[in-house]
Length: 348
Ligand SMILES: [Zn+2]
Image (cartoon, rainbow, N blue to C red):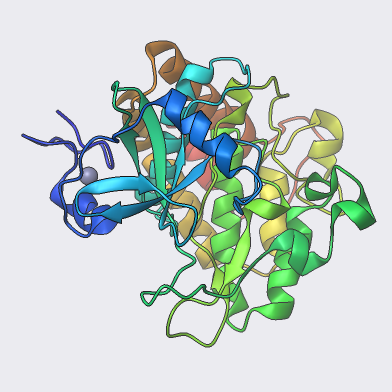
């Protein structure tokens, strides 16, 4: 048996001790006492009042004793089942989000919202994530997503506003408003690479936020949330992310290839003055963790087809995207990372 939080082997129960502590105050929680049909009935009845944004159906839950119960106020968890709308491979979306979040947390070591798979009464899986925007006394922490920080909205920028920007714009906003911005920029940088590798075409402005953690006076990036290999459910071109990397700059290789490769990611790091030693550290982490990431994909709760697609996409984006440089004359560029990337490519 394996833990439905972190995939680690366990002898009994559903979650390991660590996940139980992190998610449920150490309690052994019961299976949900409702099924997916009741979820949608409840969701309908709550529709006008629910405040969580996004298109995927979700409800708030609270922990009472050993039960996770639907609630319309002060919920400390969000529950997302398989969506009612028809998507390709929708049966895998729950395990896909869970796997993507665990890769973020365990392999990329990015602060990530605590999450797990839970089961409806009939045994169907749903994705559960613990909210991070409440203090221990129940008060709401200050939090703002980058659409609002940058000042983009549907009214001023049209329906597509959350996709109509760049990671450069997010990084520039961080430089303007975060006191310890160099740490947050590096954190953002790793998140961008993660989104690229897992094929998340939905890493848009609203899926990055700043908040003021309890007991702190300054703002920092919230834990990572809403991560998905979206290319498995909606057709997407190779190398797509939610946003462009740059506002207007274009590297030579991007001009030739039409997708981001090492030169682009290196140029982004230089633009935001990430020191060479830190860049090397980040890429060593990524390249040395590739096999661990692949093991985690194999070990996930996705179907065999889902695992195969996830693995293929991840491997392809790592090898033919992130680590790739053009060999043709005229495409040489000053690179700190190329020796590392070439070493990696020789090994895979
Ligand atoms: Zn666990």
